[in-house]
Image (cartoon, rainbow, N blue to C red):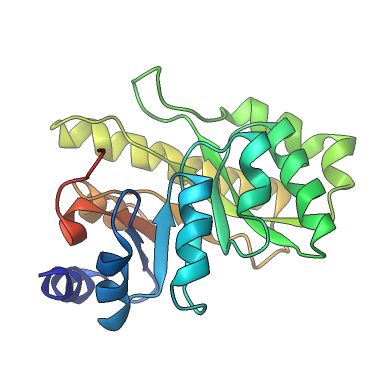
Length: 222
């Protein structure tokens, strides 16, 4: 079933959009099945779970950290993580830079923006991002690389609202590209869209979509 689900989604996704299979709470066997079907990018929310899976599963998997990251948990993922989607404070970025330096790595990161109506979601606003990027501290960070932005739309059936939020994130991306990253080709990623709304996200310019339940079935939280 996982293979069929993956093939169906991939067939509908245009070139230039990367499918991140959200495998949090899923057993290794499910990830292996998706891997055997050709999937290589997987998204996790919990650092220790991601580390444990990385140790057992094939080492050419690209691990994307997509959850809220606490500074004391960074050490579990820095040796191998491909992309951290969820940088939502200057302190977190500084801590990632510090840990990456210990491992002699430059870690790719996305700035997470709060675009939803729910207050519970994390993320920067544009002014906070500009303060971060203008700061002297940011100029000293040599072990991180900002590759784009990420955001989560409101969990709602209102497609008009969801599209508006994705357009807002795209506008933030364009502003930062123009003002801070015009000469940096790595700044190209727009991570938005999940199982329920990824087709709208793609229409609005997403380059990374994070799809879990549409591939693996409902989440297991036990």
